[in-house]
Amino acid sequence: MSRKAGPETPDGRYFVARGRLWRKGDPSLCDTTRRAAIKALMQARLAERRAEDDAERRAARDAIEAAKCRLGEAGPVWWDDGAPDESGQHPVNSRYRDWWASLDAAARARGEHDPRSN
Image: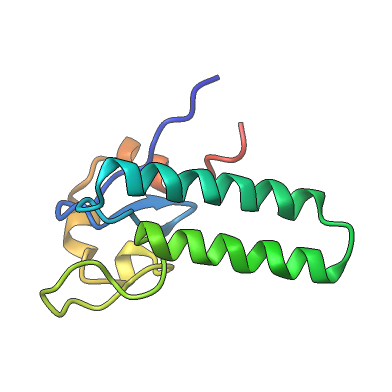
């Protein structure tokens, strides 16, 4: 079964899933850098699942965070207009509230849905 993506903000900075804004990767990254960071992220996630103790789990989580920072999904924002990072907020509680209200019910439902579930 394919997963339907949640709505993306008009400025392309976030997508909405599980009722929260999630920062998208930096679109200015070259393909080589982006692919390397994605590979590192997937390897770190696998290492986290396979971790046998707290130290391994912590190291894997640190590697996940580092890869997300390389992608622009975490750490300093990749845009330069001074807008704050609104990751983790519900769109209603952000500067995207009017955009969120303008979406049809089906689009908002996709944004409230947890894509990890069926």
